[in-house]
Length: 81
Image (cartoon, rainbow, N blue to C red; front, top):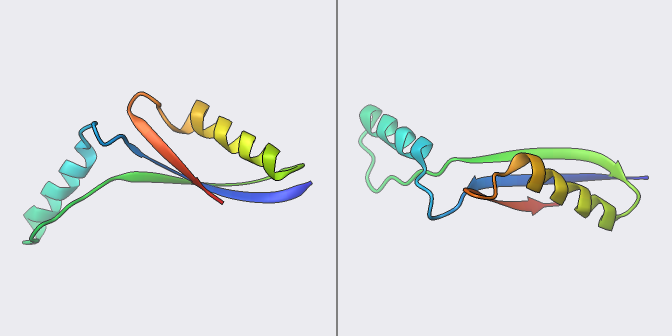
């Protein structure tokens, strides 16, 4: 078996309002005066595991992302190896 490592970055789809980012932006502006402030909140999951092949590893990570990490109604994800 080979060792694999992947990062899955999950973020809200562009059409979904990011309430956490709006709250963060408000807090920053209450603390500091920042011009043209833009915030986005993402979650990155780092996964390390063993698989027989790159194809099997890709299938494993895609299944994890689809079934556990991202809500496909409101979120999208990107996998980095």
